[in-house]
Length: 328
Length: 130
Image (tube, rainbow over all chains, first blue to last red; front, side, top):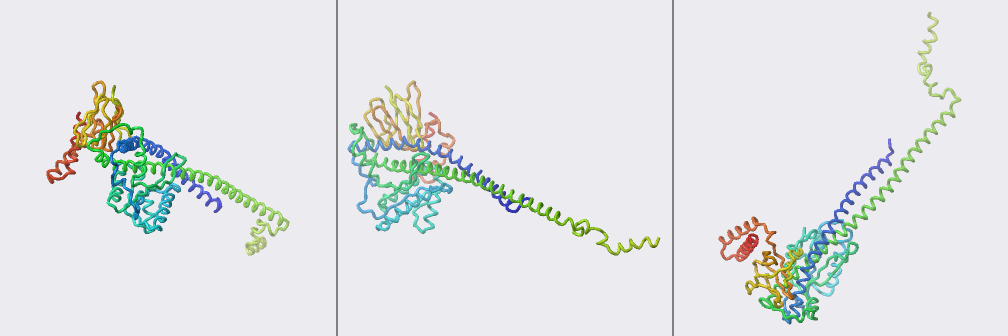
């Protein structure tokens, strides 16, 4: 019969083992998802590159690049923040770092008197900001794990409308950039207006000499192109964020599995010590008991067997026994 | 001399190969055929068929619902976020979509959205049936 401490330890080891199985499975799943997310991010690149190239061509051919999405506000009075997080936790510091970077930016701008709108992707950001009584303009859930272009379009449309209607002067996108499996970086950058790209394009590229023909007109092409460009950029960010999420989860689950292994070893040692202690105590008790018996052996009265002598137990019976021969 | 053709969607490159001629329908320009030596060109695609005539009398049909076609130095890039290769089209689904759109149009004959989806379904069917 194991001691109480042993039983507790054994139960803990079993529970840690079960947890380890789960974290190990999650680690493996996340690892395979990172690869898939990376492939999707790579597959989306040619489209983004081609669209950027067309914009560059357009700018290089001297078309007037004037479009609401390119116009910078003279004074920024309201900024929309788009935060990309995940729906599920257990991804280490993945969500909290993006959320914290966004909140810091938001608060700094708020001190400068700039109003905000918040657009969250992923349950984690929505939960965080809602709990702290921030105003949420829109929340999207269920898309960050495996974003489709359709999702990107939906979010981009909302942001674009917000920007073009004049309610918002600037859109800032906060997400986790996927650099490699080992490294992801929280990035907070201006998403709209699309100023930097246009300036790069104006600086001229190799295709500047080519005189493009535009159908129906340069302005019409640009007007059709820019919303697609915004979508493609957001899609790229969503894919990056998804890959980062899985990479972070993989890492978090790997260290959880390692910790569980350490714990199992440590608890195993504790268990052995407890068992040994129990055995030692038992032996000590037996030895002490035996010693005690040996010490009192000289006194007949103290031997258990002597005490069991019927003479002591039934004195009357003894009398009867003694008197019996008299009757015969 | 052949054209290098690429059909690029946000999900990846759907088609890449050589072609003798590419025919696409642009907004405001109708069907335009591109041959080698075409001047640099950028156009917006209308909902319609893109036909890629490959060397050896083969051809690839694409149902493109919007996007761009960009031509320079004998390279034709078709960018579309809603495009399907003829082989990928689910005819039953396209027909269902067509029936739905027609139904919608009968109820509201001035529904632009329904008209557009009818057009898309028709283009899809055209592409699928060659």
